[in-house]
Image 1 (tube, rainbow, N blue to C red):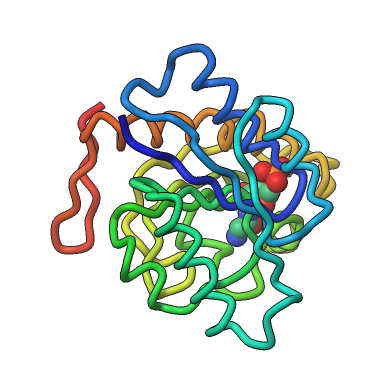
Image 2: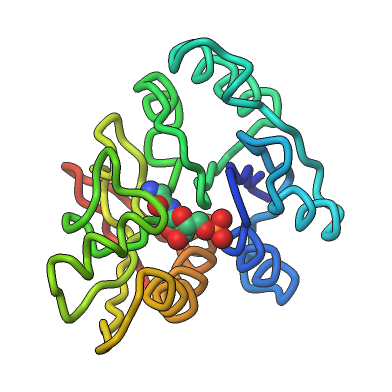
Length: 208
Ligand code: GAR
């Protein structure tokens, strides 16, 4: 059984999608063993508590710089004996030691079709604001392995979602979550836990 450790910063709807999928038996070979939040009051912690999942806070504010925070996260992941690390609305960019230590074992969900609307500064609602400002007619979500390049690691799964007339960043975010993120992330976790993802020359191949 693979230990899945989920990193969060906020509401945790993607964490909830993972919890629900696990409870339905849709992540065979994997178990969410710990949730780690960068913020003490994150609602995601309540979701973990309700599901009986051990949780801890590694508060970003308690560390003076990215390096010392990344070291603390690395130590926590090692203590938790993580086989798979999932960034589910984790809003901190970690330094390169973390993705290197967990190469092809750490995945992130991003609310756009990478390589569009991604990289430093593109997170949460800002991604959807940028998609609307560009006037794209399709957006979506991507689950990818985390590399030392922000939003630049091997792409595992993507799904497209239409942009509709009159969309606001909030309505678009909701549609992207419901139609893409909440389905893709548990699916990617399940594929990983069944050893159905391989990476060669920076490209992920998925046995669906
Ligand atoms: C999600 O839309 C996720 O894709 C995004 O933040 C939201 C978190 O929601 N992540 C990023 O933008 C990371 N670059 P949640 O806390 O309800 O899962």
